[in-house]
Length: 302
Ligand SMILES: [Zn+2]
Image (cartoon, rainbow, N blue to C red; front, side):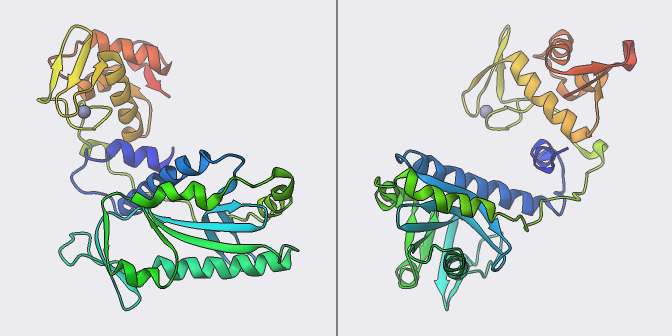
């Protein structure tokens, strides 16, 4: 079972977050930033790019994005930090009052390292004539860096509000017959070295809180929902769902939180709510899940 699905299911349903939760949240945040940037990249015509490219040689390196143009390689490093940050003495630190505490990394240093390795790789593989351009992208709209101008002296920085410049940077003149050779060489250089989030701790199932949540904003529906005949709506985010779909989403969370097939009784306990009939819960079990066993011992799974 996937760790991300597990943490997604128990997020907000447990009192104490397991230790790996932070790594999971960082991963989710990183993915959100990269997805945003990808939306912009993919709108460019004839663009050739690689996402999350990892290499072990000439040195271990991970690229968020490598964009290949006729004579140029563009490297993008994406950070989806949110909140107030300070750039000082070559370090990027969080706001002192931020409950998440300090973070003393400088992604520009990381990007320079990635650039050097790319230069060596290009040279070693017959592409020495390619230029390299690098950009550090802060993709979160709520990110604020004090000392940004100072950081700009070190390299190119794009903020969320400047993402519209990306298509211009990438350009439209890339010709597939010219970029293909380098693309193929890079693809074959891929070697994974980062570790997957694995060996995660599971919270005992009895510590996981059942109950219905809005599939969209994930707020509890107990008091914040209106129930109609076959629909219900979340008062917080104002979304209307078919009851059956809302139960389906919550039963998926039950399945991942339990880490095993569930019975009808467990489904009813998990989804118990005065606005929801047992019949509807049974129907969702039958309609959306595979099943095994008979009568009371019948279990449902994905
Ligand atoms: Zn909602």
